[in-house]
Image (cartoon, rainbow, N blue to C red; front, side, top):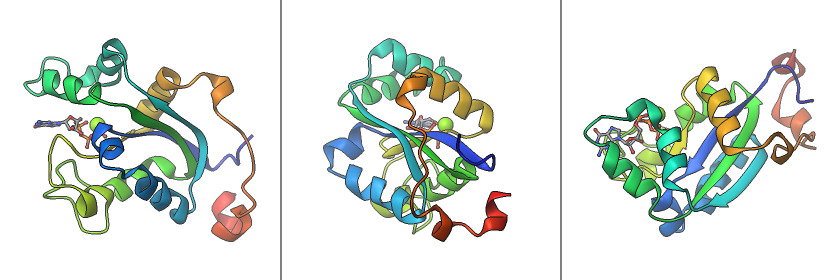
Length: 159
Ligand SMILES: Nc1nc2c(ncn2[C@@H]2O[C@H](COP(=O)(O)OP(=O)(O)OP(=O)(O)O)[C@@H](O)[C@H]2O)c(=O)[nH]1
Ligand SMILES: [Mg+2]
């Protein structure tokens, strides 16, 4: 089992990240932060799964375009672990629109669009739980201790 202080969040490098060859850049940022990959796969998303993932936006004006974009090319789906990983990843990702996102964030550094914004991240513990079960079977989430864990964290971070 991961340390009790660890959270697991669901991240998706979107079709624009795959098409632009930015998956390595994005994964590298997560790794350099000290986060741990617990699951990862390339998926060409079926329409139904895209609609389930973004169900909270059904009926909004941008929904059809969002689903068309999200199913237009493969995505890379990741389960990412670490202390506070849900909020930490949202901070690393930045504001929804790349033109407004702060420099230093993934969207702020790498994008210029509100729709084609490179990466999805769960926005709460409830969303993370729902999205992880939507995208991964239990057996696809790998439990291991990173050899760097004792350098990334002070013992008090984990208690
Ligand atoms: N074209 C357009 N797309 C939007 C708009 N609002 C949201 N989207 C798209 O719908 C996605 C989901 O919107 P939100 O959940 O509000 O934004 P978010 O949490 O920053 O993005 P995700 O991590 O992808 O969920 C965004 O990432 C955009 O791709 C909008 O006003 N116009
Ligand atoms: Mg969202």
